[in-house]
Image (cartoon, rainbow, N blue to C red; front, side, top):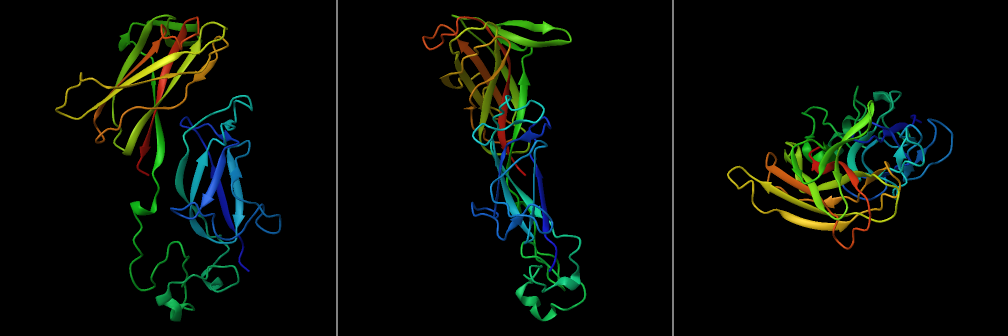
Length: 319
């Protein structure tokens, strides 16, 4: 019997940090049907493992499958229980789920002479049945090759789009009434925009829709840190506009308001829930985003200033 096929997948965030305790589902391509065959925790012997998998302290899942195949790997934050391996269990890390194609590789021990062995690569193209014993004649079910003709087509349709992110820090660009400041003392310092209580202040950013944008709405995650240890939540509004060439860049945008979290301890990073922005028409369009704290709103009961650090913009990209 041929040896098992090795599956290894590492989950990392946009900055390259390994993500521990993320949930990794392995599906047949384009479906939510669990991968075919069985999986084990060793290349021989060992015990069975089941789908979904959970990443270890290196952000890795690993298994050995009895069937070589192409799969979809769907990853999410495991009900917000995932965290960067460098931060420890207390650093819960929420990120947008993503799906991408992945191979369960044919083991190097499988050679052309192994065709037809139990548990080996037996799914030869139907038209090749009479040539199955020919020298060098083998293929797997996921990516078949004719023996005497060109390989089967393999292009964009075989891949799944993924989620990418773009972080926009606070800079002295379009200041919407807040106060540009520095939190901390160098080298432990960063640039922020101070948003006072009982006032409507914020900042605006402009950027181009990335050229690998596939389709769908852009998203926004506000990053800030409260300046005082107290109770209460911050009220936000986000206004966004997408403009193609020839369109007005100062036209009214689309606005939405929401009540955020309570930055209960001073200086601790707060990542607000992901909000939808605007759906652009095409890559290369101009996007304008304004983020404001509505400090005078009755739902804003955090009686202190908070420091806006930046926003994380997410989008669906072409794989």
